Length: 131
Image (cartoon, rainbow, N blue to C red; front, side, top):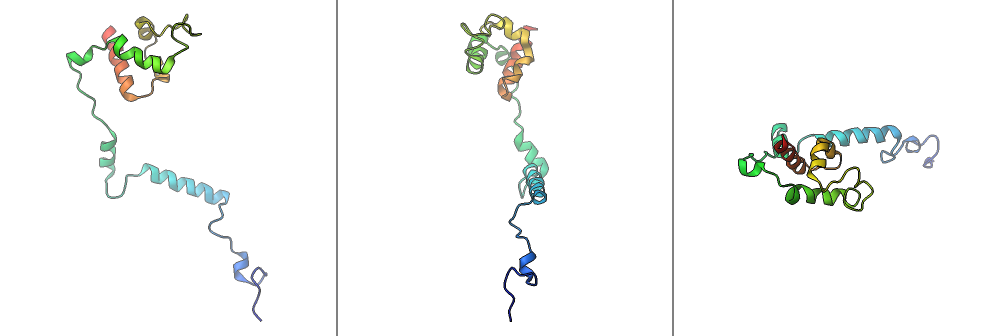
């Protein structure tokens, strides 16, 4: 007489499905996914993957070294720091971002809000021209 599925003697009754996510399988899955995310795509070497991620900085010439506060820096600050650090804002008295002197005084501390590499490079050039 055949055994019914789910009884103690039927071999399928004691197997766990591989699709059930247990804590151990969940951690293993995360480790595998993290390793895949950091490895280069198939067919490329690690060196070529690193080279494609980097963008060569533009050479700094005399014409590009001069950064205009009102034309280049202030619009970035207005998009990130308004209304608080501009006229009428709650931080304007202590840190008025519409004044170039304030921005030069703060220097790289602004990078907590200015995250884009190209914008940070612009700010660094602005800081350097004050020296």
